[in-house]
Amino acid sequence: MNDRESFGNVTKFFITNLPPRCRPWDVADFFKVFGEVSGSYIARKPDKEGRKFLFYKLQKC
Image (tube, rainbow, N blue to C red; front, top):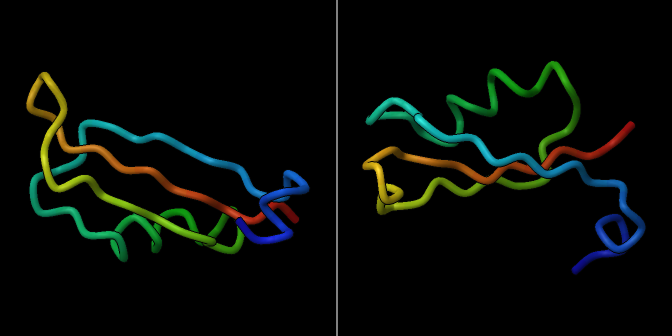
């Protein structure tokens, strides 16, 4: 864990029901208007209902 995360300067998101061919850079293009991207992870396997999901982190201003 880096210093920024330890001081709470990161906002974390959980996003579900992504399109099947969604890539991390597709989501980054959408979220870049809200701040600096500090990380993203799209799960390889879908959730219990068969939906693709993503964890995303943005730096707070």
